[in-house]
Length: 385
Image: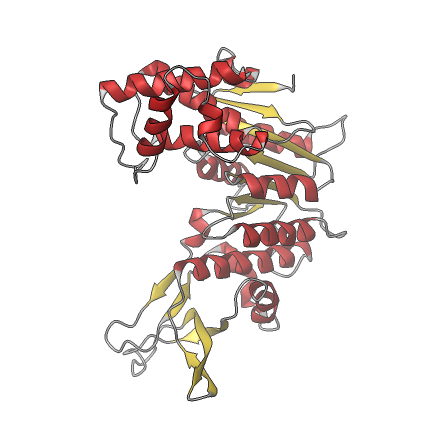
């Protein structure tokens, strides 16, 4: 059984991850890669890790998470509806090296961005908002203007100041981060302070092909010979996790982070078999069925595990993994009907008592049929590190 450690809180987990990079007497890690479900606390953990690096007003961690995305916000020029730009929070240390007038950040971002999309952009470090041009001393902002080529009357023209989609915006911000990550690796002026990089869930609004491409691009940057920055990566995306696991054969720690009922945490090393998220999901369904706090969206989770089992055995239909269970016709009909609703995990609807009983019968019959074994991380008593 791979090693399991238990922690009282996320601050203790962050300390453990930093310890992987600094411990004496053993080979130091260069990368921590871990998987955790949404809602486990990945973003909060990234902030705990970042806060630990602050000493006497200085910091040592460059991070990418939901707070990084908040450094970019739209000014849509609601009055003129012409000057739509993405504003940068130039007060953040994230942008600290962009004051260097010799730095052409656009040409560092552009080749990364164009691997995923075809729109263009220009960064304006002297942007004045519409209506403020005639002020005696107008404030100058940092802004990004987006451009897309369009075919008009058979002639290609540039359409400027466009509003890009949310998915395109996420990609742009990610590529902006990668460009800064590379500047930190190169010890560029303004980024000498970066000793650690913490990346939390970079996958957003991407299909599987782009998820693979993004993982490979990130891995190639991490593998650079002159990269001495220690890196932590967290994700809830199974494909991204597995690609990163296989791409990075450097000294790394890979693990699964699990949040326990008592608001404590456990991490288990993956060893050479990195992924068992379907077992974790099945265990979570087992736990909620025993707690009686069962919601309609849990049928969706049960169907997800069954579909993975269908693929594993080379079957073609979900009824083939239900075959042999008591009342299999009813079970099959229930899974088909009750797992197709648009149930929200943010506004959950409790199951009726009849459906709860049906859910538990299907789940327990499925677990018994295939004799699923749950790793110790899911069943161990809560302990402290």
